[in-house]
Length: 106
Length: 141
Image 1 (cartoon, rainbow over the protein chains, first blue to last red):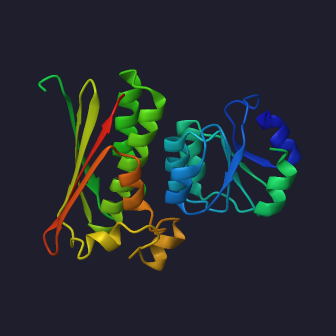
Image 2 (cartoon, chains in turn blue, brown):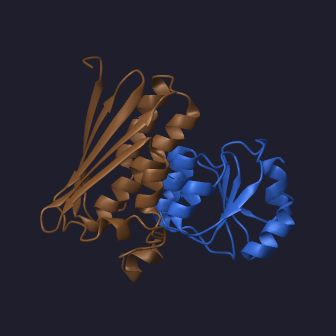
């Protein structure tokens, strides 16, 4: 599914998107970074409520397709800066994780 | 063994801003060398976990990396408090991280287990009061 469709489905605010047409395949929900690192598939959507700069490191190492911060939680300043700097895609949705997964269409 | 590409990194303690820098550098180097993505992911995860452990528990340390044609050898050395019970520390879900650290998304007790899981060889030596040395090998085949 294209990232642009996910953004629409989730009424998401774009913090950084490098390519809205890229394909996102499946997803993973989690907030403990080591668990996410061990399990999140490449090119997937990572649903989380974590919002600090370590999220960028984990997303970059696991090569998830897009970070989806749920529940309207805003990324902190360092995270917002980091995703722009390293070219990671990050969006924020107002929906809680369970709702967000259902609405995403993934 | 003389054809190794040798890299060394200082990992500073309690600094979550620079944490992951060494893993990222190694990942970039492996990509440049044309190593297959599935091996790069294993190395990146295992090394990031090790880096974070040194940041959280040991006040920093040193990462010594040797890349050969067929494998990578990563040695993580710290002079932190050491691990009193290695078997327990290697148990999934066991963590001594504080609430502060958990708020950052760490402390799931998956660090050492992930390092073991994603490497082909894993060796941990630790002495209480002296420090810990972890050696990890990932084969590229």
